[in-house]
Length: 109
Length: 116
Image (cartoon, rainbow over all chains, first blue to last red; front, side):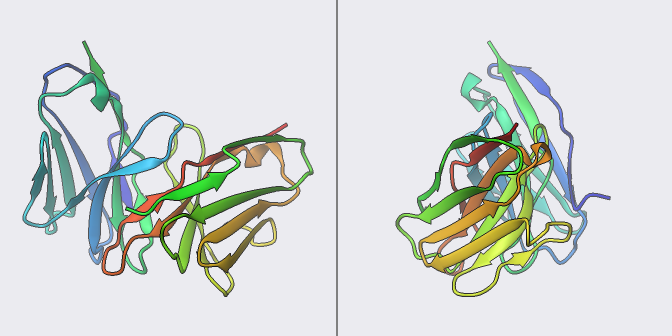
């Protein structure tokens, strides 16, 4: 079983749609959680950290369920520029990040 | 966040040659840098953790004699792919720790290596 699992997609949605991605992690001792965004042939860029209480940044909402070892990302009012691969990332110890395989999002006009 | 650069951004080399990739932290003193590799349509896989002034820590399955890491200063880590083979063709990305107390990492723009 992979340490961090994501549905690879692709998710094809029209502009303005709401889309949700899920992620599960296997290490119950994981400490920090993030969503990164990676554009084609580019480096990952931090989208947002994920907190137990849930957090929102504009159109993006992230939630963490430690009991179920489950992380989610919700994108509202999708824009064409949201098309990218979204990486679920978990920090276990020593600041070592483990990346999920990524979920590809395609927003179409 | 921290600004990280990598050089070169792209390199094509012949099989059997060695390639050096530089990772620089431009505005932040990084005692720890990380080297990742990403094959097409796969996620990032940590290769090694580079510690300033000491030996790098390699992940299981990564040959330390093939992927030489040097972290001689707080702003520079280098990865040398020795005797490169076509299967080493990949996207190599470095990152640095974030500020003290955070677990974010800041990534360089990556180096695309093609071995012919």
